[in-house]
Each structure stands twice: as C-alpha cells, then as structure tokens.
Image 1 (cartoon, rainbow, N blue to C red):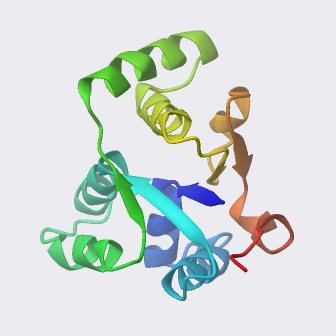
Image 2: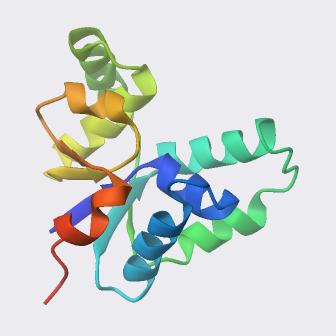
Amino acid sequence: MTYYIDTNIWIYAMIAHPKYGEKCKEILKNIETERLEAAISTQVLGEVAGVLYSKYGVKDITPQLNAILSYPIDVYIVHPDVIRTAAEYARDYDITPYDGIHIALAVEHNVKEIISANEELDKVELVRRVDPSEFRQDCRFRQ
C-alpha cells in the first residue's frame, strides 16, 4: 500500500519540529529503507522549496530537493486535469487549492491514505489522513 507524503512531513523533519520532528524523521527513515511505500508530487517539491525559501530563508534549496528525490518514492506530476479537479475539491470541501491538488493526485493514483499533520485534510472523505504522531500504530509496512 502506498502512502502519499504531505509537504509538512518533509519540512518538520528538516527543521526538527518540536511536536512532529522525530516522528517525521522516523517516517522518512522507513521510506528510505523501503519499509514504507510512498509517493509525493511535484506540488510537494514546490511547496518544500517555497517554505524553505520564504519562511526559513534558505536561498539554495537544491540540496534539500536532491535529498527528497533520492528517496525510493514515486513522484506524481501535476497536470491541468489535476488542477481542475483540485479546484472542485477546494470548493466542495472548503480546503485550500493546494490541499485540493494533493487530494486529486491521491485519488487519481488510488492512494487511500495521506501522512500529514494538516487536519484540514480530515474534511475530505476520499482519503484518510494519518497523523505523523500516530505513525507507528497506523502504518502497514511492506512484507
């Protein structure tokens, strides 16, 4: 089973977030060792770059993006039909268009669960959000 890994998991691991940092690092370690099958999107890469640049003043985000892309993960491409669907999800579920993109890609690729600290995703019944703090008891590992 593939899990979609939201932007905040990468950011919280990178910045050692006080609540989620260690759990997010654990999630990434399980992806790295291929115990957890995961996917991200070009949207996640763009959001990571934007947050690191605008919020944390990282001017060269190349090392961080290269690190993410070194993981054994699928990267889903955001295309125009995803944007259209995301806008509908944003309208219908009262979520941000960015979150709509994550949901649209998960649905398009038949991914049922998104690992994320973003509680806004709980509004959407199309996927189930797994909070990073619940990672150990929730995740089913590759056999």
